[in-house]
Image (cartoon, rainbow, N blue to C red; front, side, top):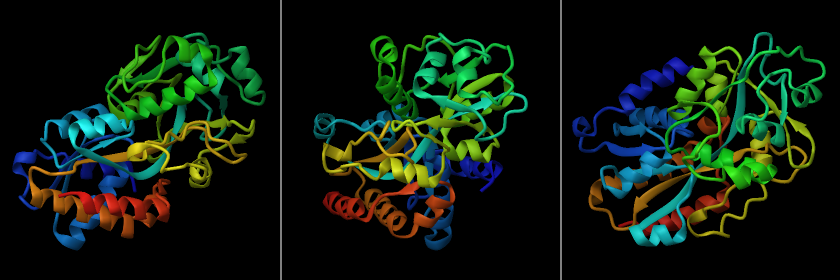
Length: 335
């Protein structure tokens, strides 16, 4: 699906909730899964006549809106803790998985040509590596002609689950990052130009020669951005792909945390992508609007049953059947 198609769908999805039909489903949150939610929404509307008004505003915004009860569901790539779920009366379940990829805009560099590793990526975002012809980058890319120009760092400005997973990975591979920056949906960034949403980061990288950013893989492909390869936890150089994301998720123990709150960063495995991530849905266990909640539950059941091919076509990883079966039990508890 072309990015222009997603933008067109976005205007429909982000329409004012007050003007939505009563039967339509309202949600808000993570930009990470937005391309897929847009595709699902379009297909579901054609099949059932029921629309999905989804505001792609970032995970932080999605959490705030579900807490304020202004939407039927929230979406986040940074899962809430069991204590927070209990406090707010929410249920949380994973919807789909995908991959976060570094993207660069350097003349002559095409997708999957440049190689990065975790420590080097961390040092770029820490402001320690400031030129493209830095010795660390040249060592990783001996065959590339890298310019002696400044690296323009693009990062998120909003509360972001993509940032949470990106920082979670960097904290695993860089003690400096772990100690001085940490892990959160909103960071005190050492360097960089802020942009809102995966869309904003993608657009900024497209416009700025010499830039680097991080986005969900679908945004990189749809915008024709030069995504990089990465050296994974096994020391192997891998390119982002559906198979690499699947390998990154294969060892996840989804029942190990309340609300399926499993973080997939830096997994073991020779073919695993190091920044694989999940995205979650938040709903009230006892909804204020029972009819709207029931409509949302039907949509999610449909997506689990009928949406896998659409997910894979956009390089997202569907949830395993065992997880879907457990999620079905959670959906049955929503009143």
